Length: 553
View 1 (cartoon, rainbow, N blue to C red):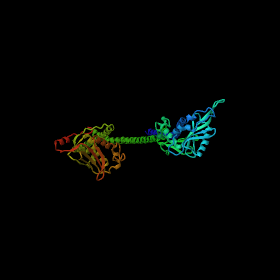
View 2: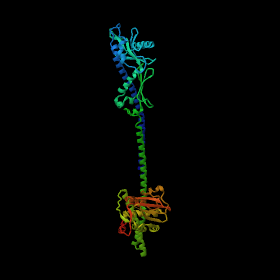
View 3: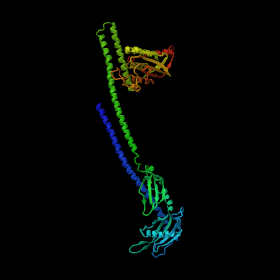
View 4: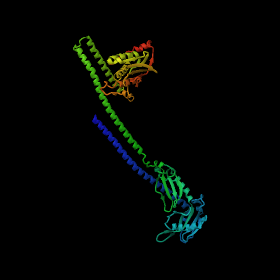
């Protein structure tokens, strides 16, 4: 048994160690997942910024192509052709990037790149603005080509003017056909003119793939900020970027706007990549549960050890309890068999001792049988109406024969009018066990058996004058094999009170132990279905006439 216990303890320890190792690896995996998830969320934010910038560029190019294309879209046939003036951009001035929120000048212009001649339509620009426009737009148009059908944007660092332009080219025929800048046509507007375009993109264009965003709108999913090349804010959307937001690298075009995007932490967990650390509490909970189960298993194993020890003590105690009466029975039986009794008085004394020891054996065997039935949940009782006082007197008489000289301390306080529905044989076992317990542990003082009626319940009390039962042990003593004094100090098997508890429970009653008024213990048994009748009535006579079968007879 000891080697098996060590093996089980080792197995439990290995289980707990394995669970701890799994938890450590899970924590490491969670940390790795956190790093990967945060990197992915930052990449998502970068993708959102680029998607916004791409959508802005696409819509801006389409609007510019529709407004400026009729004038600048067709290449000139010769570098000496006459060019349309700014008056041809009247429709573009009305439709392209309108600006009504500020007082910034808004006008259309035509810049001849051959001689830097500038004509305008709409609000008259200042001389400084005309000079800046001629130099900046000419440098941009003559610099890196925009590409067929594309437009460029120039931001005035000194104020709020933004220029959207397209380049009209001339086609040369040489060894290979190519085009050269001839003139620039465009519209000068305010920075605020871009805000409606930005808002339309946020409202209509998904900034992240649908399978990633889970169908969330941009305003809920992404926080956006758009700034001009000088760092001045042009547009904000979505919730403000708080601590813990996952911001990506800003997206920008050289010399153009810059877009910053971030994912709020409260929606990050709704993306395809789960919120970092979401499973860590579950893993730690599983580890705690494993540790708890291991502790419970270890405690159960310890209880099993205690149960084995108690059963061994019980076997030893029962063996001793059986050996003593058997020895007495054999001794006086042999005395009678061999005719060694000197006279009739000695023969009667020998027979009395044999009967007394046989009753002790019967009582012990009956307790063991009751305990066995209780463990198998086979305790059965057959309650009938019984007058308690006559039955208890008979039980006391039989206990007197069983207890010998110890019974002289027994007193009774019985009410002859109380009738209860009980199993007489079971009540006999209950009272005998309580009286036997009082004789063994109740000291040398008197033992009192009393019965009373309280609220329709019969109350049986066995009171002694011993040292009493400590408050912490008043529930434990009803368990099998529990003895408050060391084995050998007081004879017994440790099952008497356990049998009392099971038999009382079979009657739907209650049992407990209290402190007696003058010291000692008071064992109380309460049985339901009790009443008070006149002992002289026919019902009382019938109740009192019920026979009590002697256990083992």
